[in-house]
Image: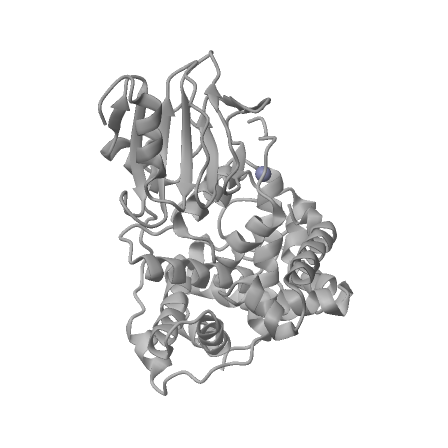
Length: 214
Length: 211
Ligand SMILES: [Zn+2]
């Protein structure tokens, strides 16, 4: 598989490895990591640092019966790991949680556009969602409140002179204005994590008001 | 008492899940402790060895509790997640691949993921699809390098300038904004951020071939 060309910054990989990213954002990085060897190497190094620092921590006292209680819970025989749900074959490898969301909750927002919530509340707080836009469609100029992470799962879009293809990761800073357009060769599906709850609906509204009354 | 560091496992050929120690590869050195932990995990996988579990529990559970407390977990939750981490080690012992990660690294990632799931209270584990699952088996050289990763990480951390190491140590297990770390170090925020960036860059260089 060809490697993505747009990667998360080191500090995001550090925060992912430390486990302190908001879950939706973590999921977007997870999707990128699934196809990006270089970033996996960085995360692996971060995790190795975590393992070393863990061992260097001063121990905290556990409850007196902690080990005994753990021993009573040990089961013999290994459970088979849960099977990955089958995913769309023309998308990059995606976390099972995203597969579930894509099957469960597609909501057509306008001709050529569907959205599926993945994590978080669709109405408030940070969330992540899938956005599918048909070939050649443009999204009007807009900005984001609070910044946004995107990973391209299928197809490509162009924004301010840069083409983002499968596996590419983009972090849009708060307030940056952009005007993405899906390339003409096919539909584009992205996994997006945003802080600001209403942006997607607003955005969809602004984009597609001419088509439907959302 | 579980015998520590007697058995150095063979991990010359890469890939796959657990391989019982076949050919011995004598590997003296500072990563012997990591090897001993790897043997304990192997003993759990192969023969459900409760003594090995108890030894791992004794070493890791109190440190995992400290880790979770640092990240702001209530003591009861920290205790529970430390327990759950070790129980997960028991259940998943057969999937541990010493060619891919040192035991402490693997255990750290288990605890990290359990903590995130506890925060989300999600029915589906956040990291149940490990992006690393998709990786092809390691080449023998790379596998050896990763097996020694603990030693190398220690060396890399030791090689960092003191002020960079300090920022990494303070921030790694802290679920707090960089601004607060800056305050604790009495440094401007920009300085803390640039030190972190420098430290990451250096670690990246020093550990680059862990890939
Ligand atoms: Zn990458």
